[in-house]
Image (tube, rainbow, N blue to C red):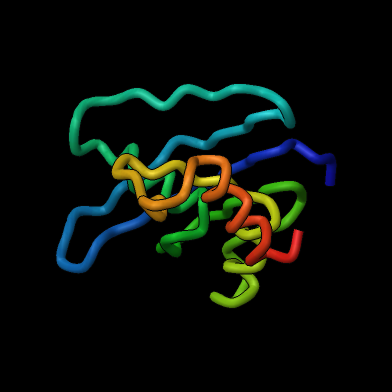
Length: 113
């Protein structure tokens, strides 16, 4: 498989007792940029959480650096996320008494980097 950076195929997700989200296929080359746009409630944050491995899709594939996240266990997904995925949440989740740099350092330390 060629390293395409990020590839999603036939991705669907639904929250408990909620409508089914069906997402378009994505290919984003390594070092490339993708933009995610849409109205409120269309599933942008859900898609980002799926790509980050924070949620499991109902169906489809999420492939990052030739690894299909949908085939990984929760522990394997956590380890992969720690090594390959950076997340900036909408709400800051930093340790408030540390600087931004120290917050990043502690994340690297906890990941043995």
